[in-house]
Image 1 (tube, one colour):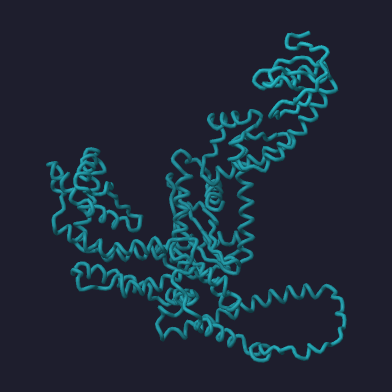
Image 2 (cartoon, helix red, strand yellow):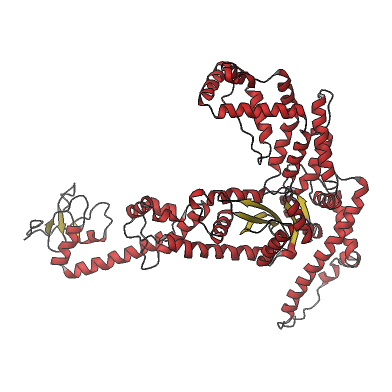
Length: 621
């Protein structure tokens, strides 16, 4: 008899099971009732004592395999059945849960595919390099969670998993674009850190549930000269690859001469990015020698503190002594809208502390702001401060923004940039120059008509910010554009009805006419409204729409149309067409940031196709 086994003779007492036992092997072992602490393990078949430390069941299985073969085979079957259930349950867990619980995924039964897809989504969404799966730390983590799991190689993720995930989501977006009647777009050029040029393209549309959706369609490698003709051909090819050019309502771009020419060659409606336009207006408004000098001094001050840790240390001490906010100075970025105003605002906030630190150093005393410079900076800050909020508010993708442009321009002229008696002459000049540029650039016929129709379709504004002499012309244009929309809808319905008529319909059973049928009200709409021409019905709907109760300015126009589209079905179609247009090209520029996080200096060898797939997945997952 082995040392681990000791036979207990003449003991027929029924054994009690182990408390909290999880393994099926404990079905064949137990403890005497008198063994309260359950320290002595006994076999139910032969009453032998088995030694097992720390809950290890290896000795128990070994005893069954040597002494009780039938019981051992039954135990193995029970163990395999429980493992299959555990695997089936674990396959429904997320990657985070699986990592947290160390869930096992059997590669032979293809359970590992689900965890691989989770890792693929993690790589694509969080822009993690593909070689992460081959790093020792990641491998060690997987091995610690479950040594039986085999991690696929980087080659599998780059050549199989990522392309398959890309095709899956591309097919989904193609389906979404096929179901909508119209969409808007934004586009812009950008260069990676390796100076490789790319052309980004995003689309925006309103779904049938009145939700504004945005997708990044493409990030195309564009090594050719960026002429208007080549850009026009590249954009047209991009839309053709998605089969959706004819659904484009408008495309929002910057003010580059090449992109303007490209849109003109393709005969598309173009909307100038409001952010770029406001930035150019501010640049024009600040063309004054006094402003240029004061801003130049600000830049040198910020540069002096940026390159000297001693000055930053002394600034923190002085800020504490003067009770000023412990803010660092802000650097102006030429491509960042409003960064100049943020720099000026921070310098004015810390002006006392900055002067005290600079005066303590002979080499930097000349940078101390004079009272004339302070007056100029305060005048500029007064003009630019409210404009920053408008730029940020109009750069969103999840809400309607194009209908705000007309009210914002009106607000600039009547309130924000209106001259006040307390304004200095410099402040008045800056306001006047900014307004002159904005009004001039938004006065062209195409842009003005687009903004008028977008404002009309927003229930918060309608004709409130529209010139009275232009209201009738805008309404006539709305009628002209709604007619083909309704015709297209009728063609779709007639096609569906024709398909239904092709199927045999059983004859309706003739019912005996009841007395109540004589008292049913006859429909009055069929004889009065339905006989009117389509244009008249649209006119009537527009009249009722304009006379509805005024909507609060905080109301989401998409929520309003979701509730009222049954009352104004024709206008709702036009609202879906125009309210999806972005007011700025910020969506395309956000693609720049995503691309910059993917194409880093350490990932400069990424092929253009790989960049396109990774940016596409990072923006659309």
